[in-house]
Length: 202
Image (tube, rainbow, N blue to C red):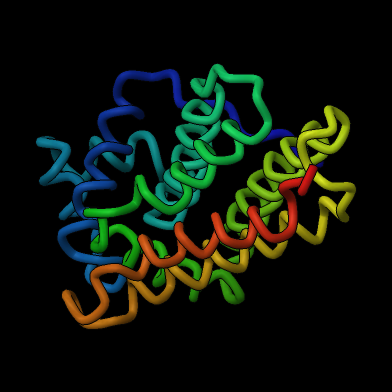
């Protein structure tokens, strides 16, 4: 598996990533411009272009940044108990995005461009691969400890990702307020799946 990207280290990069995050939330992918990112950054477009030649270069770096932040969040989960660790991981995937619908919409727009932009495709593939890897590792650990039933961990990780992707997509494409519980419903569904498939009866 490819290693997750290293986090940004430069203070300017960190500020530009934050500006990109805010601009995506406000304008979405379709209306995002370097000028709007620069406005959020509080500097000129030339200052942004000093670090990133094109908008696509910046957005590819932004996808790396998001994955690095997710990796950091996973590393902050200190428990070694497999059931609790899986529970907290599902919270990261389905509870934390609550209240960030604008960003979910922007990310869905970017994912829709992935078939046409190789760098985007690589980042989304890497992100998905990493999340499945983490899920699979937790499940395998639980199986080894006798906490989880002896299941196909790869299948379980893909099934959970299907729940996550479906919920995030639904939360993004529905008119705002039409289905405010999409992520919460998916979180409950993930728990039901874990209870039915992973947890041992004894």
